[in-house]
Amino acid sequence: MPLRRRDSDSRSSHHAPHKSSSFSQPSARDDKPRDAIDRNLSLGSTGHHHHHDGRRLDLHHPPPAGDAIKEEYEEEERGGAGAPCGGGDGGGGDGGGGGDGGGGDGGVPDLAALSVEIDAFVAAGQDGGEALSDATLERFAAASAPPYPPETVDRLRSMADAMVTAGYVTECTQMFLVARRNASDASLRALGYEKASIDDVVKMTWEALEAEIATWTKAFRHTINVGLSTEHDLCARVFAGRHAAVGRGMFADLARCVMLHMLNFTEAVTMTKRAAEKLFKVLDMYEATRDASPVIDAFLTADDGNNSTALTDLKHELNSVRSRLGEFAAAIFRELESSIRADAGKQPVPGGAVHPLTRYVMNYLKYACEYNSTLEQVFREHGAHGGGGGGDGENPFAAQLMEVMELLHGNLEGKSRLYKDPSLSNIFLMNNGRYMLQKIRGSPETNAMLGEAWARKQSTNLRQYHKNYQRETWSRVLGLLRDDGVLTVKGSVQKPVLKERFKQFNAAMDEIQRTQGAWVVSDEQLQSELRVSIAAVVVPAYRSFLGRFAQTFNAGRQSEKYVKLSADDVEAIIDELFDGNATSMTRRRT
Image 1 (cartoon, helix red, strand yellow):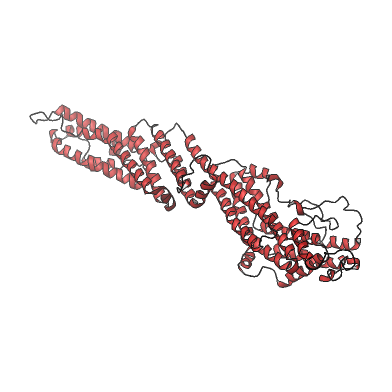
Image 2 (spheres, one colour; image 1 turned 180 degrees about the horizontal axis):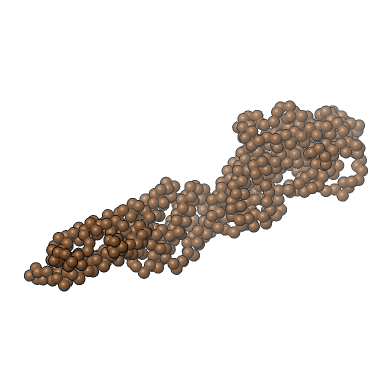
C-alpha cells in the first residue's frame, strides 16, 4: 500500500467521512432533532464534532458502514428481528423501542430523545480513553474486566441498541469509531507520540529521529498489548447479543485504522538514508511489529473468522511492514561492511594505538549481538540478497558477523603497513588484535556467535605479532651482547671491538627508550606482558655481558664513558616503554 495513502487522518474507504453536497439542504427528517444531534456531538462546550480533516459529521448523509459490519448485521437480522427500521407498518414498532430513544411515527426514531444518549455516548467515549492514564490502562488490561465502569457500558449499550434497532447502524458505528479513534489518539499523545509527515521524518536529524522511534516503539507496544484488547472488550460489551456482528466489525475497522496510522511512521523511517547507527532502533521497531502478529491472530481466532476482512488486511499490512523493516535492517548492517571497506585512511594512528575504526566496529558488534536472535531472523527471512545468508542449519547472522571480522582484520593489516618501523606495525596489530579479543570475550553473546575457534585463531595471531616485534626490535640488541668478535681465538679481549659494542648498545637503548617510550599499549595486561617478556631476555643477557667484560675498562672516566648503564638501568628503561611518554637516557639521568 503506498505510504501517502495511509496518513493518520484517513480511514478505510468503507467508513471514511462522506462530504455530501446536500449538507446544508433540509432533510426529509425533522430539522430540530438534527440540530440537537449536531449540538450534542460537540466534543467541547461549543462548536461541532469534527474529524481530523476538519469536516463536520453529517448524520443525514453519513458514510456507509463497513461492508463487514453491514453484511453480518443484516445476516443476523434476517434470522430474527426483521429489517432494521423498515419505514413501514411495524418497521419501527417493537424494534424501534429497543432503547430509550425508541421508534416514533412510521418507524422513525425520536432523534431528540436519542440526542441525549448520543451526548452521553460521546462523553463516555472520551472518558473511556482520554481520562485514563497509561498506568491505569496497564492495570485494567491485566484484569478480566475492562477499564470502564459498568454504568458507563450500560449507557453505551442502551444507546447503541436503540440506534441499531431503529435502523441507524451507519450513524452509530460512525460515531463510535470517531469517539474511540479520538480516545486512541489522545492515549498516543499522552505517551508522547505525535504524527509526523513523511517529509518531516526524512528531514529529521538522527538525534531527533532516534527519539521519535523510541517514542513510537513505546506507543506501538502499548497499543498492541493494552489498547486493542481494551477496545475489543468494549466493542463486545456495548454491542452484545444480537448486535455482536456490529461490534466485531466495528473493532476490526477501529483496529485497522489505529494500526495503519502508526505503521505509516515505520515506512517513513525505511525511506530515510541508511546509516549504521540506525540499526538498533530499526530492530526495536522490527521486534515490535513482529510481536504484534500473534495479537492480531488471537483477535481473528476469538472472532471465529467473522468480520475478518479488516483484521486480515491489517495482518497482511503488518507482515509487509515487518518485511520492509527487516530488509532495511539487513541493508543497514551491510552498510557497516561498506564503511570498513571504504576506511582507507593514509595516516597511521600515532603510537600504534587502537584504531578508532576498531573501537567503533567492536562496540557496534557487541550491541548488535544483543539482538542476535532477531538479527538471525532478519538475515534468514529478509537478508537473502547481498550474501551472508548462511546455509541450511547455519546461523546467517553468525556468518555475516564472521565476514565483518574478516573485513576488519584485513583493513587493519593494510593500515599496519602505513608504519615505516616494522616493530611499530606489530605493536599496532597487537593493540588492535588484543582489543578485539577482549571485546569478544567480554560479551557472552558475541563470544557465543563467533565461537572458540575464532578466539583461538586470534590468540595465535597475537602471539605471532609478539614474536615479530621481539625479533624486529630486540634481536639486534641481543646480538650486541654476544662474545663473537670480542674475544680472540686465544680468549683475549679485543678492546676496540668491546668499546664499539658498548657504544652501539647504549645508542640502541637510547633510541628504543626515545621512540618506544612514546608508543602506546593501552591494555595494561598486554603492556605488562610485553615488558616482562623483554626484560626476561635482555636484562640477564646484559648482566652476563657486564660480568664478563666491564672490568676490562679502567675504573673512572674510561669505564663511565662506555659502561653507561647497569643491569638495573636497562630494566628500568624497559619498564617505561609503551606508556606514551618519550624520554632519553640523557634526560632520564639528569
